[in-house]
Amino acid sequence: MNANSHKQSWCEVDNHLEYEKYSDFNDWIDEEAETSFTIPSAKLGDLSQKSKALFTGDRAMYNQVFEQFRAKEIDETFASLGDEGHWSDKNKSRFNQLISALSQGDIVPFVGAGLSSGCGFPTWKEHLIRQGKIAGMPEVDLKRLLQEGQYEAIIAEITNIHGKDGFKQHIMDDFFEGEHQPSETMLLIAEISKGMVVTTNYDHMLEVALKEKSIEKFTSHVGNCDSKEFFKILMDDLPALLKLHGDVSQPRGCILGEEDYDIAYGETAVDMNLNLPKNLINLHQSRSLLFVGCSLANDRTMHVFFQEKKRRDEAGEGLDEKHHFAIVPLPKEEADIIEREKFLLAHGIRPIWFPDGDFSFIEKILSRCLLELQYRGISIERMRDKQRQIVEESMPKLNLSTFAEASAKFLEPFLYKFVL
Image (cartoon, rainbow, N blue to C red):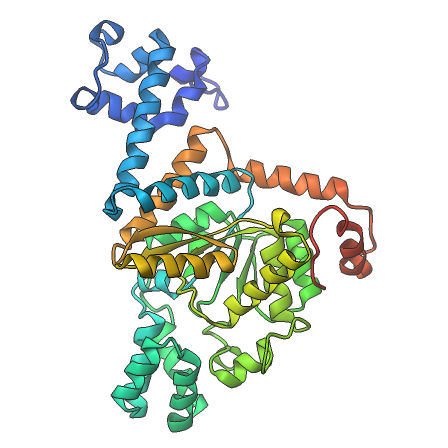
């Protein structure tokens, strides 16, 4: 046999490559179907692979059962909220909206400390509790500030007691990778992103996950990197990791306490002339963000998004804005759910709820996303290539030294009002 010859699969011989898109459904038919759905035995015969028999013998029946299977799987995914349907139904609708954005190659994951905890690191809240105890901070003050979400105030108090260098060393101690490995959720994030990810985390788990998913050529940038340079990365749709608040390997450059935040975001209000807010706004305008593992509290990052949404609404640009999503825990009380939803929507973010404490739900949602894309025959790489081609065909040939300034002027009438 020629070394380059290829043994054709059943699907290639019978021109049924589409069959392979539904591998989980086919496994279900072959192993479990009789327990949930009635499939006439005459359609299946006595074959060991009933899914192939049904696919080739009665495609209409195959499609009908598949749609029932698909609806059942989605219903079961969202049924765990236990809210008698209201928020579960919203979840299903927003999940479909998320899939629509994913199918356009438009989603950029925005990863918070909640995902690093799945890799064995402490949450940011747990880390601050450790630091507060080491610094001798009164426990009653620590608990009060944590409950109020006043993380910057906690860091300011700890550094006043313990010193800034000590604080940064303890970050190095807690978030240096050591024996840690990315969780399955982190790997799913890397697979969905195909290269462009934003994070507030200091650790290196996303770098490891991106490499494990064979995304080797990504570049890493801190949040306050040059906005023109980052704008070019966005326009070229290049694989990149934006570490908003710094990297554990360079603790002196990390954005930690109030003083650091004032320098990066502005003192009394967000300063839109600074690089970090500019980079966030360009992301907010050009991509659909998917927040995972983020607290989404009333912090500086959220202030940027709120101001940008307010500006767009007042300018009559609200209908053209990107749709952003967040996978977040469902509060226990209905009044708290309504208040949380109002807060997130005011920042342009559509929540997809999960049962409080059930972090396995995040993995289920992300796995479901990949399955839906597979069902539709959509390759994320292909969709992003298509998006890149559209951008490139729309852009004039420019000298690279003037790329950022000229591209902003050129794209403004029919794309986004980026901030340079």
